[in-house]
Image 1 (tube, rainbow, N blue to C red):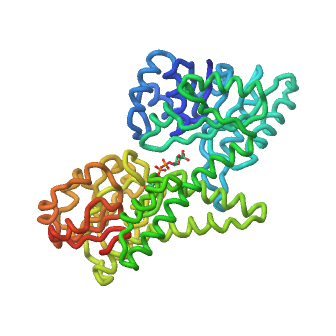
Image 2: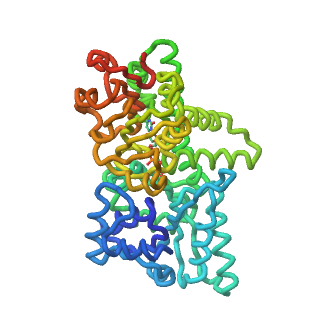
Image 3: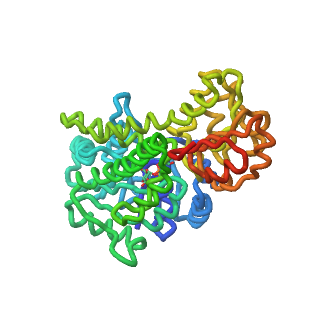
Length: 442
Ligand code: UGA
């Protein structure tokens, strides 16, 4: 099938690459000419395991093309995916400017019947807006003979495992009431839908809400666990025992109940805000969502509070080693990363930071530039030299079994603040560390 994908961000690029891998002929279009040139050379703008090889291979095979030429791209596709960004507006609502611009462009240049697919995360009612934008242009062109449908087909991939998530989706949500579109979408996704039927067909608005409901549910689980962790600390209980205790109930499950330093990334914070905004706009008080958001904001400050308390609020002149900067492992994404809240709080208190992250150093450098108070180190050991304590913010695999003797030798005092519960408190005590973690007796 011939497919056009607008937007080569996380969602568009991965989706385009995966569709081409199964044999569809995909043209990805982006307004950023530099990015398009880089992609043609096989240079991927994001760190995502496995993606580069798939892009290179399918580009070389001619199944995956990159262009800035929207007109030619629109002629190519039988299905037009809209996967451009929906950044939060100042009031927290999702900004649909890019999505509606693409809709107008499609309306301007389509010459045959089309299925337009909203892949971007967009508020309930956006498909109607896209439809109206396309209709308006077609009417002006006097081309009401061309028919089209707008399908909501939200994406559920996770950064860091985006390729695998796309190759093996848990579900494929298709929001439309048009039988012909359902047919085309089923054909498109047939290679991913072999063992059992993963396609769930529903009306457009329900599909749009499904995306937000999924992310808000996951964010709620995390905030709930963080709240329990804070309670456990005060009560003298161990959240890791509690986590296993409740996770063993299949109705609760083990997934996504890890306490930590708060969720970050480009999705949960933005989607939660957007749904709260949608609720406000129809005079619905989304009490639970607001509580989730506020717990998360607070959670991002908890590591700093522990550090501040340990050092009796005397952080001026101290230097801290930070391991892990990205919002989670296996990505270089720093959007809404808890490490940023922590570093900024440390700097405000007059402390310096020596940081190491396996992938996010360049991105950190891009965000903060050269600062006297931030040194980016080439290895996790180098980050420890002449520092007052180690702070772990992201649970990269190679932080899980470090050389503790070396850590002790390099730190001026043996203190670790662990925002991800990587180590056993008893063992850490036996090794002679002051060990602070989340939701466990410190
Ligand atoms: C999230 C969803 O998991 C995807 O299903 C969704 O498609 C995506 O948003 C999106 O809307 O595009 P992502 O933001 O890549 O994916 O990252 P997650 O793996 O969900 O992690 C989000 C945050 O929650 C991270 O900061 C992570 O550290 C935190 N987290 C996760 C916890 O603190 N505890 C947990 O138990 C799980």
